[in-house]
Length: 365
Image (cartoon, rainbow, N blue to C red; front, side, top):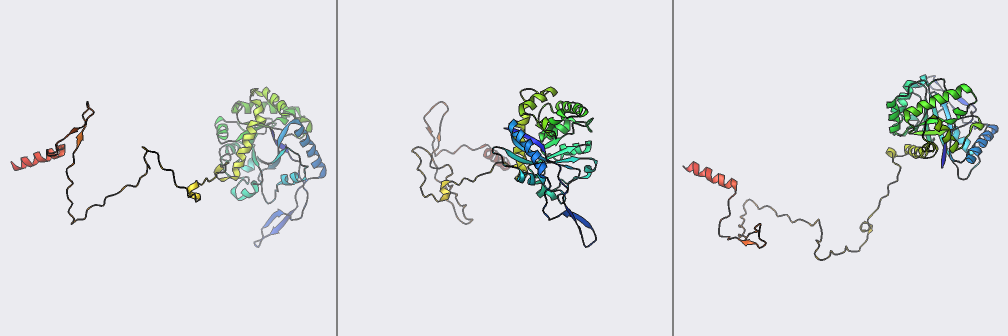
């Protein structure tokens, strides 16, 4: 089972927005109720050809990626992947997923819409990803947005085709993100870019990511536009061995690691990130089983938790008869037969009683 979690969707047509005015004179823009199609038939046909090639190359799980720049507003940004999946032809043995990637810029440092108020909107996507472009947004992504919550981000995508990474990849931030369960994405489409400068930048940025992560927690996706840059899973693994990834673990970036990422992404919709469904097992006796319990075998105790008989304390005016003297037996250390003691002889006094008797004698004197 091979995964490609970065298949970009075509550029949608801008939705129809309607302006409403409140009683205080404030204007708000909301989506129009009139039905419209955000993609043309030609765009859907091109996407169909890309998916057919991905299936032929051996990918069985494909994630359609919707990219949003800056702050996201659920009222003006619909989920375009729902329309695409409804217009794609069904394919047997292929699973489609919906992914949302938010590109964080300088204006996103004060907030970009990933709040609990819009949790219902983000719940429509299977995978959430962030692409930071500043040092502040990268720090917030690694430390805050990777913690378990309904808005957990599981993929951190880096702009590898830029001339230089806009921030320094610190080991502490990267380790914190990996410890929280996030993965760093390397889109191999940049290595096959038509622009020579972009290819050179991609190789330099990919080596930096490999140096910081040491090859752990990496997922590989396409992320390109040209259909000629699509490659099979093993070709991608061989390509990424050139940046220093071990040959035996290079294939995990398209198989094992994204599989665990998809399973972990399902925890956004569960209570406290619980994946398994607990089942209540009722014992037979509680279901009305009238069969009596089996009697214990001879020589075994009947029950460990037997009821204890508590003796009530005597009343204040009630006289209690002294118990008859009982015969005590003392077992010597070197003999196996008990020795009978004479009950007429007084029992030896303890140390406290002896001290009390000596004190009384001193007072009498």
